[in-house]
Amino acid sequence: MSWNQVASVLMGFVLFASACAAEDPTPTESALQIFAGVPADIDPSARYLIYLHGAIIETAGVRPTHPRFGIYEYEKILSTFADRGFVVISEARPAGTDGMLYAATVADQVRELLAAGVPPDHVTTLGFSKGGGIAIAASSMLANDDVNFIFMAACSPWLDSHPETVARGRLLSLRESSDELFSSCEGLFERSPNPHDNVEIVLHLGGGHGAFYRPRPEWIGPAVEWASRE
Image (cartoon, rainbow, N blue to C red; front, side, top):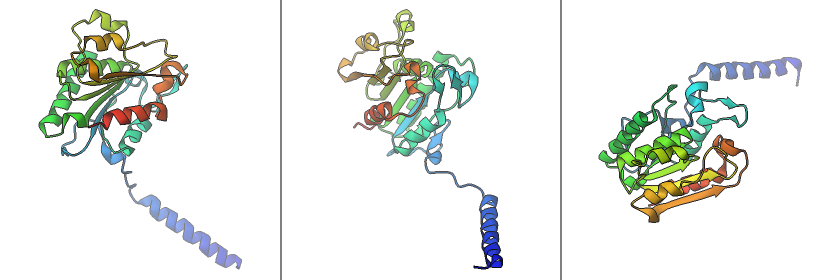
Protein backbone atom coordinates (compact mmCIF):
# COMPACT_ATOMS: atom_id res chain seq x y z
CA MET A 1 0.00 0.00 0.00
CA SER A 2 1.41 3.39 -0.97
CA TRP A 3 1.80 6.34 1.39
CA ASN A 4 -1.06 8.14 -0.39
CA GLN A 5 -3.31 5.13 0.18
CA VAL A 6 -2.33 4.96 3.86
CA ALA A 7 -2.98 8.68 4.26
CA SER A 8 -6.37 8.28 2.62
CA VAL A 9 -7.35 5.47 5.02
CA LEU A 10 -6.17 7.47 8.04
CA MET A 11 -8.11 10.52 6.88
CA GLY A 12 -11.19 8.34 6.57
CA PHE A 13 -10.85 7.22 10.20
CA VAL A 14 -10.41 10.83 11.33
CA LEU A 15 -13.53 11.97 9.46
CA PHE A 16 -15.54 9.02 10.83
CA ALA A 17 -14.41 9.72 14.41
CA SER A 18 -15.24 13.41 14.03
CA ALA A 19 -18.72 12.58 12.77
CA CYS A 20 -19.33 10.23 15.71
CA ALA A 21 -18.11 12.82 18.20
CA ALA A 22 -20.48 15.41 16.73
CA GLU A 23 -23.52 13.19 17.43
CA ASP A 24 -25.29 13.34 20.77
CA PRO A 25 -24.26 10.36 22.91
CA THR A 26 -26.96 7.72 23.25
CA PRO A 27 -27.82 6.99 26.90
CA THR A 28 -27.11 3.45 28.02
CA GLU A 29 -30.07 1.23 28.73
CA SER A 30 -29.29 1.22 32.45
CA ALA A 31 -29.16 5.04 32.57
CA LEU A 32 -32.69 5.15 31.19
CA GLN A 33 -33.83 3.12 34.20
CA ILE A 34 -32.45 5.51 36.86
CA PHE A 35 -34.60 8.36 38.17
CA ALA A 36 -34.17 11.02 40.87
CA GLY A 37 -37.80 10.54 41.91
CA VAL A 38 -40.79 8.41 41.05
CA PRO A 39 -41.00 8.35 37.23
CA ALA A 40 -43.94 10.05 35.56
CA ASP A 41 -44.88 6.84 33.78
CA ILE A 42 -45.14 4.03 36.31
CA ASP A 43 -45.10 0.51 34.91
CA PRO A 44 -47.08 -1.72 37.31
CA SER A 45 -45.24 -4.79 36.00
CA ALA A 46 -41.75 -3.42 36.76
CA ARG A 47 -39.69 -3.88 39.90
CA TYR A 48 -38.66 -0.68 41.65
CA LEU A 49 -35.66 -0.14 43.92
CA ILE A 50 -35.20 3.03 45.96
CA TYR A 51 -31.52 3.42 46.89
CA LEU A 52 -30.61 5.67 49.83
CA HIS A 53 -26.90 6.50 50.01
CA GLY A 54 -24.59 7.16 52.93
CA ALA A 55 -24.00 10.57 54.50
CA ILE A 56 -20.66 11.26 52.78
CA ILE A 57 -22.38 12.01 49.47
CA GLU A 58 -24.35 14.82 51.11
CA THR A 59 -21.13 16.73 51.74
CA ALA A 60 -18.58 15.44 49.23
CA GLY A 61 -20.46 14.79 45.98
CA VAL A 62 -21.53 11.72 44.05
CA ARG A 63 -18.07 10.12 43.87
CA PRO A 64 -16.41 10.97 47.18
CA THR A 65 -13.21 9.49 48.57
CA HIS A 66 -13.08 8.59 52.23
CA PRO A 67 -9.56 8.64 53.69
CA ARG A 68 -10.05 5.17 55.16
CA PHE A 69 -12.70 3.47 53.04
CA GLY A 70 -11.77 4.73 49.59
CA ILE A 71 -14.04 5.79 46.73
CA TYR A 72 -17.80 5.52 47.14
CA GLU A 73 -19.01 4.39 43.71
CA TYR A 74 -22.57 5.64 44.09
CA GLU A 75 -23.40 5.90 40.39
CA LYS A 76 -21.90 2.46 39.65
CA ILE A 77 -24.11 0.98 42.37
CA LEU A 78 -27.19 2.53 40.76
CA SER A 79 -26.17 1.26 37.33
CA THR A 80 -25.57 -2.22 38.72
CA PHE A 81 -29.13 -2.46 40.02
CA ALA A 82 -30.52 -1.01 36.79
CA ASP A 83 -28.55 -3.62 34.84
CA ARG A 84 -30.24 -6.28 36.99
CA GLY A 85 -33.60 -5.12 35.66
CA PHE A 86 -34.79 -2.72 38.38
CA VAL A 87 -36.19 0.74 37.86
CA VAL A 88 -33.92 2.63 40.26
CA ILE A 89 -35.01 5.71 42.19
CA SER A 90 -32.26 7.67 43.91
CA GLU A 91 -31.05 11.22 44.34
CA ALA A 92 -28.00 12.80 45.94
CA ARG A 93 -29.44 14.40 49.06
CA PRO A 94 -28.34 17.92 49.99
CA ALA A 95 -26.01 18.49 52.92
CA GLY A 96 -27.63 18.35 56.32
CA THR A 97 -30.74 16.47 55.16
CA ASP A 98 -33.08 15.73 58.06
CA GLY A 99 -33.35 11.95 58.08
CA MET A 100 -36.87 11.76 59.50
CA LEU A 101 -38.24 14.30 57.03
CA TYR A 102 -36.60 12.47 54.17
CA ALA A 103 -38.00 9.18 55.43
CA ALA A 104 -41.49 10.66 55.06
CA THR A 105 -40.63 11.50 51.44
CA VAL A 106 -39.50 7.92 50.83
CA ALA A 107 -42.70 6.55 52.38
CA ASP A 108 -44.70 8.80 50.05
CA GLN A 109 -42.72 7.50 47.06
CA VAL A 110 -43.59 3.94 47.99
CA ARG A 111 -47.25 4.87 48.44
CA GLU A 112 -47.26 6.50 44.99
CA LEU A 113 -45.92 3.32 43.39
CA LEU A 114 -48.47 1.16 45.21
CA ALA A 115 -51.31 3.50 44.25
CA ALA A 116 -50.28 3.13 40.60
CA GLY A 117 -50.76 -0.63 40.82
CA VAL A 118 -47.23 -1.84 41.55
CA PRO A 119 -47.46 -4.92 43.80
CA PRO A 120 -45.86 -4.28 47.22
CA ASP A 121 -43.39 -7.15 46.77
CA HIS A 122 -42.12 -5.40 43.61
CA VAL A 123 -41.02 -2.36 45.64
CA THR A 124 -37.75 -2.38 47.59
CA THR A 125 -36.14 0.39 49.61
CA LEU A 126 -32.44 -0.18 50.20
CA GLY A 127 -30.50 2.12 52.48
CA PHE A 128 -26.84 2.21 53.47
CA SER A 129 -25.46 3.89 56.61
CA LYS A 130 -27.45 7.14 57.08
CA GLY A 131 -29.57 5.97 54.18
CA GLY A 132 -30.19 2.77 56.13
CA GLY A 133 -31.47 4.77 59.07
CA ILE A 134 -33.77 6.65 56.70
CA ALA A 135 -34.99 3.33 55.30
CA ILE A 136 -35.73 2.04 58.81
CA ALA A 137 -37.74 5.16 59.63
CA ALA A 138 -39.59 4.96 56.30
CA SER A 139 -40.54 1.32 56.96
CA SER A 140 -41.94 2.35 60.34
CA MET A 141 -43.93 5.21 58.80
CA LEU A 142 -45.24 3.09 55.95
CA ALA A 143 -46.26 0.16 58.18
CA ASN A 144 -46.78 -2.19 55.22
CA ASP A 145 -45.70 -5.76 55.91
CA ASP A 146 -45.51 -6.71 52.22
CA VAL A 147 -42.98 -4.12 50.99
CA ASN A 148 -39.28 -5.07 50.82
CA PHE A 149 -36.65 -3.23 52.84
CA ILE A 150 -32.90 -3.78 52.94
CA PHE A 151 -30.84 -2.15 55.69
CA MET A 152 -27.08 -2.10 55.08
CA ALA A 153 -24.81 -1.08 57.96
CA ALA A 154 -27.81 0.71 59.43
CA CYS A 155 -28.36 -0.36 63.03
CA SER A 156 -26.60 1.42 65.88
CA PRO A 157 -27.38 2.78 69.37
CA TRP A 158 -29.51 5.57 67.85
CA LEU A 159 -32.34 3.04 67.73
CA ASP A 160 -32.28 2.69 71.51
CA SER A 161 -33.40 6.30 71.84
CA HIS A 162 -36.22 5.81 69.30
CA PRO A 163 -38.38 2.98 70.72
CA GLU A 164 -41.28 4.32 68.65
CA THR A 165 -39.48 3.26 65.46
CA VAL A 166 -40.85 -0.18 64.62
CA ALA A 167 -39.60 -1.51 61.29
CA ARG A 168 -42.32 -3.09 59.16
CA GLY A 169 -42.10 -5.08 55.93
CA ARG A 170 -40.02 -7.93 54.55
CA LEU A 171 -36.76 -6.95 56.21
CA LEU A 172 -33.20 -7.87 55.25
CA SER A 173 -30.16 -6.63 57.16
CA LEU A 174 -26.72 -6.80 55.54
CA ARG A 175 -23.77 -5.98 57.74
CA GLU A 176 -20.03 -6.37 57.50
CA SER A 177 -18.32 -8.18 60.38
CA SER A 178 -15.38 -5.74 60.37
CA ASP A 179 -17.62 -2.65 60.54
CA GLU A 180 -16.87 -0.87 63.82
CA LEU A 181 -19.53 1.80 63.30
CA PHE A 182 -22.71 -0.26 62.98
CA SER A 183 -23.92 -3.47 64.55
CA SER A 184 -26.64 -6.11 64.35
CA CYS A 185 -30.27 -5.29 63.57
CA GLU A 186 -31.54 -8.16 65.73
CA GLY A 187 -32.80 -5.73 68.36
CA LEU A 188 -34.75 -3.84 65.70
CA PHE A 189 -36.20 -7.07 64.36
CA GLU A 190 -37.44 -8.04 67.81
CA ARG A 191 -39.79 -5.04 67.70
CA SER A 192 -41.25 -6.13 64.37
CA PRO A 193 -44.79 -7.56 64.37
CA ASN A 194 -43.75 -9.90 61.54
CA PRO A 195 -40.51 -11.47 62.82
CA HIS A 196 -40.74 -14.53 60.56
CA ASP A 197 -39.80 -12.56 57.44
CA ASN A 198 -36.74 -10.80 58.85
CA VAL A 199 -33.24 -11.97 57.93
CA GLU A 200 -29.76 -10.75 58.78
CA ILE A 201 -26.70 -11.72 56.74
CA VAL A 202 -23.23 -11.06 58.14
CA LEU A 203 -20.55 -10.61 55.47
CA HIS A 204 -16.82 -11.04 55.92
CA LEU A 205 -15.41 -8.87 53.15
CA GLY A 206 -13.04 -6.73 55.19
CA GLY A 207 -12.77 -3.01 54.72
CA GLY A 208 -15.08 -2.09 57.56
CA HIS A 209 -17.85 0.38 56.72
CA GLY A 210 -16.39 0.75 53.22
CA ALA A 211 -17.42 -2.79 52.28
CA PHE A 212 -20.61 -1.31 50.81
CA TYR A 213 -18.90 1.58 48.98
CA ARG A 214 -18.66 -0.40 45.76
CA PRO A 215 -21.07 -2.78 43.97
CA ARG A 216 -19.44 -5.99 45.14
CA PRO A 217 -21.24 -9.21 44.19
CA GLU A 218 -21.11 -10.49 47.78
CA TRP A 219 -23.76 -7.93 48.82
CA ILE A 220 -25.34 -7.11 45.47
CA GLY A 221 -26.34 -10.77 45.06
CA PRO A 222 -28.33 -11.10 48.31
CA ALA A 223 -29.90 -7.67 47.78
CA VAL A 224 -31.07 -8.56 44.26
CA GLU A 225 -32.39 -11.91 45.47
CA TRP A 226 -34.35 -10.28 48.29
CA ALA A 227 -35.79 -7.61 46.01
CA SER A 228 -36.78 -10.22 43.40
CA ARG A 229 -38.84 -12.46 45.67
CA GLU A 230 -42.52 -12.96 45.00
